[in-house]
Amino acid sequence: MSQQVIAFHYKLTDVQGQTLDQSEANDPLAFMTGSGQIIAGLEKVLVTLQIGDKRRVEVEAADAYGEHSPENIMTIDRSQLPEGEVKVGDTFHGPNGEPVTVTAVAAENVTLDGNHPLAGQKLIFDIEIANTRAATKDEIAHGHAHGADGHHHH
Image (cartoon, rainbow, N blue to C red):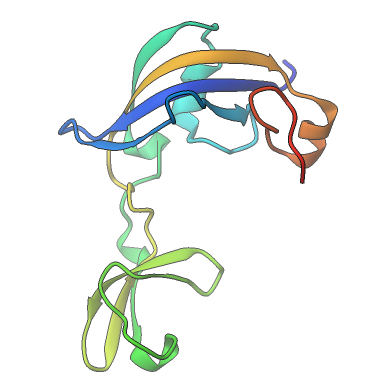
């Protein structure tokens, strides 16, 4: 099957019903299938839907941002971070460029968590398909969607 661009509106909530994210009112999120732009558990359902379809999709942690992994938590010497105040919730780039979040600050050490903030959580998406179309040659070459209509300037 050729790659598709799917544009959809969504509201993401956690299992307690708290809204975590949502698409803009008139601006659906567009992605190219097979590009890794969205979580696998959601893409698996989106590719089966047609324009106008509405669906509630529950995605287990393993098919979303993975399970929370203790191996992704590290304590480093405070001197390894930039000068200035460091507080819980700050985000830095880890050794491989991945985002890490400060979870604890002590006089000499800082604890960093490299897990995605939504790791270990079941996610619930209420979605509506706004548009589907074949991906353009440019999109396939670039590895991502160029918007719902295929026009995008780099």
